[in-house]
Structure formats: C-alpha cells, structure tokens
Length: 489
Ligand code: GAP
View 1 (cartoon, rainbow, N blue to C red):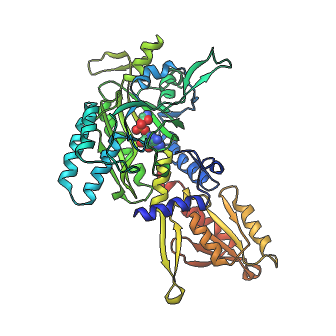
View 2 (view 1 turned 135 degrees about the horizontal axis):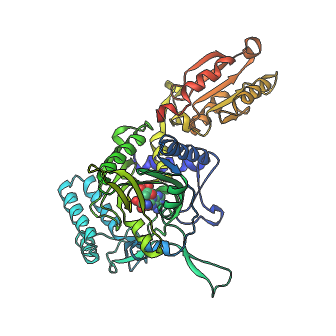
View 3 (view 1 turned 60 degrees about the vertical axis):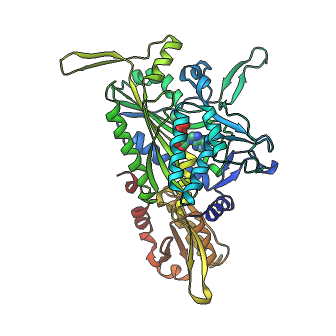
C-alpha cells in the first residue's frame, strides 16, 4: 500500500464516521483523535476480541479496571519519573523538536528505499549501539554524519540531544498550594501491579496466573504522526502474567507465540507480521520483543511482549513497605515447598488504536468493478464479519407498498443479536456501496416479491453476489459467518 492510499484511508476514516481529529472546530489538538459512530463499534469489537481471547479463554487470567490517577509514588517505583524519556533534538531555525532516533530511523528507511542496504544496516547497528548505551552525543553525531536536515527548515542547524520526560502531570486537590502533583498514567500496567495482592488473595489465584486490563494511557509524545499510530491519549490492552522465578523464559516464549497467532487469526495476511527483538531493553526488562505490522509506512511496532522480571513488584514493595510476595505451597523436585517469593512477570501490551489502524489499512480496498463504459471503483472494507460495525443492512426497495414494514420486522427479529442498519433512501446500488465502505458483510433487500413469497435478496460484501432466500434463512446465514469461533476457536 502506498503513501497515497494511506491518505485515502485517513480521509475514509473521517468521511465514514470512524475517526475524527479531536476538537476539530478549533482546528484540532495535536495527536488526539475521537472515534465516531462507526469507529467506536469497530474499536469495541476489537477490544472484545482481545478480552475474550485473554480473559474468557484462559481460566487463570482475570480482568480489572484500575483508575487512571494513581498515587504519585507509583511512578517513582516504576521508574517512570526518572527514566521515561525520549532523546530529543531541536532544529534552531524551524524551532521544531524531533525524536533523534526517529530522524535516524527515517534515514535508514530512505537508504533501504534507495537500495543502499549496506548503508542502512550499518546505520541501524550504530543507532542500536547508541540507544543501548544511552549515548546522546553519538546520536547527534550520527545525525550530522548522515547529513539529516530538518523537514521544515531544510537546515542542519541542530541543538544537542537531550532527554524529555513523556508523562503528563496535573494537580489533585482544590487549593493550588495544597496540591499534590499527580500523573496521567503512561501505561495501564502499574494499575495491575499495585493490585496484584488484592486480586491474588480475593480470587485465590495460583501461580501462574494473569491479570488483564484495557484502558487509556497518556504520553506527551513530541513527535506525533501517522494518524492514530502515535497519539498523546491512547488505549492499551495489557496483561501481566505472574510466574515462578526461573520459569520466565518459557512463559515469554509461550506468550510470544500466542500473541502472534492471535493477530494472524484476524486474517490480514500472515506475511504482514514479524518479530523484532529489542536490543535496548527498557529499565524493567530482561527480554523484549515487538510484534510489528506492515503498515503502509513500513513495519512498525503493534504489540510488545516483555519479560519484566520482578522489577515492578519489588520496587513497589520497597517504596510502599508492603510485602508483594506470593506463598507457593507446591513442592519442588526435592519435595520442598517453594515458599515465599516475588513473582516474575511476562507482560503482553498492545495498543488498541494501532490495532484499529492495522485492521483499517489491511481491510481498505479500492476495487475496479463493472465492465467497459460502466467501469467504476468501489471502496470496500473487508473486515472480519464479527468485527464490522454493522453486521447487516436492511433495505426496502421503495418507501411504500408495505416494504418498509417487512424490513422493520426483519430488523426487530435480528437487532438483539446483531447491529443492524436500516436505509430506504437512494438507489439500491448506492446503498450497497455505502455499506461496502463501512465493511457491512451482508445487505438484505426487501422488494415486491417479498410480499408474495416471503423471500428477500441477500448480497454478500466481498463477492457482491446476490441470492434469493426465504426470510426464515437469514439467521442461519448470518450465524454461519458472524461468530467468534473463527477468531477464537
Ligand atoms: N506496559 C508496557 C508498555 O507500555 P510500550 O511498548 O511503551 O510498553 C505498548 O507500549 C503498546 O502501546 C505499543 O506496542 C503500542 O501498540 C501502544 N502505544 C505506545 N505508545 C503509543 C502511542 N503514543 N500511541 C498509540 N499507541 C501507543
């Protein structure tokens, strides 16, 4: 998919009520987006897919919904106050600020595009080494060496590279003087860590077990770009899996494979996914891998799987003074109980908005249809049926002769189980096209023959084939295609 098509995807998302720029009447707010009437349905369905796969399908994983605001000490313990920063560089002429590593990554992509693979690889190695050593001076010298110019001013007049913390802060309390500085959470994971014992004890959970959560996270991303790829307010779906120390490698491998398979089941094309092992590990990790997706602008991180050791629970134990230990009564090979320990953690963390973008980009198709002088382009979202905002659209051919009544009756029979769309305006062809653009897998047309023999025409989104069926068969046809089994079985 080209850059040009990506622009079409972005405008399609707006035109068809999937995603709008936030506060658009005030010219928008950088890297903040609102989901419209169709976007929210797709997003809810994706969240449900994740929740079912993680919580419903795993006996030993339960969910929580922790608050966004947390005690400020949380972020001290987690290391975010001291270490959650990006290496930034400013262009002195345009006054624009960039992430130094992103500038270099763009250069690598350009080398690759121009067939300079050796140069790309060499720069990638140097970038990895600089990030690994947190060598800010080296990052600047790479930018200079590779003659990277500011995309706005076109000059190479750069400041030094500095670290900027990405957390948003605000105050809690009515009086400014009494106010305590608190943070909008930059990840949902910490809400799980601080509730580890609450859940373990009240749920009588036995290791290994997981706690899952979906919710908003906030980061003051300096470089916000590529639509909903990098946002300042976004949603994460995270799961912390608590394991016995020493077994983390085995569980890391398990979740790596499990999560990749989950993505692949969406049917967006297996070759669109790959692993990318981290060279530079976050402060809490002893192993980490990204699942990358082939977005129109290249392979980028979609989900992270991190072996977080006992870092978080241990830090919270130290700072809060509360024991974060688990008593393991099971016996080891010598017949001795494992006893008390701080569990190790494998984390899976996927951005819901990025997942949404991957599904939107891979489902968006512009197809040539018709023949000769009737050639036309139809835009269709080939979404997995169970994820589509509307499952079925019902059209009376005309607004009279009792056809709307039959159509309404069909909707009444279906709407408890399926999100239905009703429309009686415009030619049928136009109505079909509008549903294609929303990804609706089935359209049903009620016409005069329906009055005589209780049949309707069903039209399939992907093949555009139409079939005459008795009204009594609608449910059976829908049920065969719209169910979670295809994704979760
Ligand atoms: N708890 C671990 C954690 O937060 P991360 O790699 O920083 O790890 C996990 O984030 C996932 O959250 C990413 O793989 C990505 O899908 C999503 N994500 C992170 N920052 C984002 C942003 N600014 N906008 C949209 N999604 C983001």
